[in-house]
Image (cartoon, rainbow, N blue to C red; front, side, top):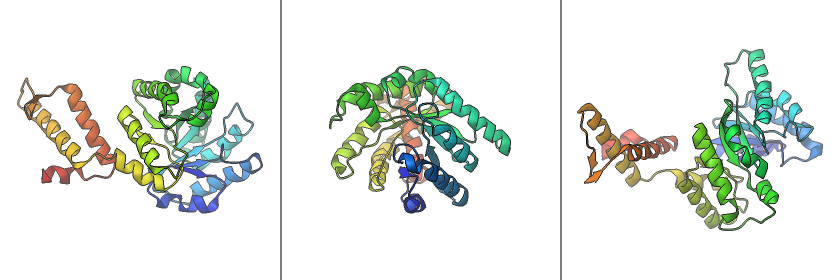
Length: 290
């Protein structure tokens, strides 16, 4: 969930809504006159408060703006989980941020990899370079920033999302090739919950790992849509148990409910169970109830 970095009230309450990650924004949501205030407010909050959710700070771009390097100097010693690098267009930009992170980790005696990077693709140039960007060792996730991307395309945001279809697919495939997570863009009309649910469902079905949100009421809907239902969990557990049994007993053919099961189906079943666990579902309790 995006949280404006210049709002003490919103920073203080951000951890109460159940978001998996809190993204403190000191970039686009902050006017030029408040950049310094926001970065210090966020840094002090990270040092003074204990957040249960993962903490991410969206900095200003370190080369495209005069603010990014100063953001890193103030934010990194506060030890967020991740830095969100906006408008990334080349892997060299990730490397610049990574070097700053490495320096701070060494200065503080932190383990290498304590702070990582999530990049945001927000331009055609960034999309063309996304595979190389995703493979940088500090990158743990990639996201789509739709508003700037659509502006670069010289088009408009639509209900169907057709203008973002190629970008979503390209970013997702680059993430899968690199073995990192992929997050979908925000849905800015907080009043249109029906449209929001439809977009979250499409993102989930495409294979995204999550959805960025800008309002607390959107969090519950993302969790609901991404959490596998009881039927999906039961079927997946049955497939995984049968697969485990086939390995133990050296069975050459795996059959569940009259259907042949191969490795891709087993992998998809494991994905369902992983999502269920990440969503807080007690999988072992579900197994016992089956």
